[in-house]
Length: 255
Image 1: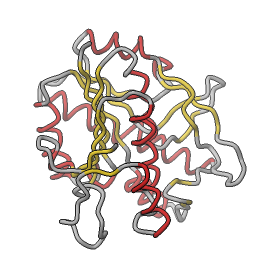
Image 2 (image 1 turned 180 degrees about the vertical axis):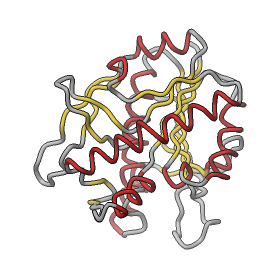
Image 3 (image 1 turned 30 degrees about the vertical axis):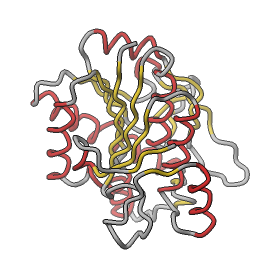
């Protein structure tokens, strides 16, 4: 079974030009076939504030009303996605930028309104493995943004960690998949104020304990939820790490 790397890069790195350039250098040097999934929440929040709209978050997930959806699509599927693709092309990596609607690659359903009404937020229903395999077989690197669709004409904002996990789980049926969540921290930290307090490995019990004590919160919770979901579904390896450490073993192994 062929190997595949699914790499998710967070908005704090995407919005940092130097960090992004360094990450992309490391990404293109990965020896195996790969898929890149990116967020962009930092730029989306900045754009909303310039429009006089204060972003709303619940447990690290964005409330997406109609105006917020327009901004999310413009930022994620537009500027950021095509900028990343252009930078990959400049490095000799033949990439194609996709939202979930392109090629119907990721279908979602709108999240139930209870207990929290997240608005136009999608929960992934399916990933088109054959479509992604077709691109990979042609030597093309898919670059997926945090926008999906419901096959009824509606675009949906979807957590990029969820997309990365869903893609990894789907591709695990045909490939040996390694999933890496890259962001601005060195991994899951025992002490959020201490960058050197990286937990080298965390299991589900440790995760639940850290949630209960408040040691982790906000955006780390959905990231770890998605990481454990991927491991449970047969993804070979999941690791959370700093984008600067993509090429080394520093980070938190899940499971």
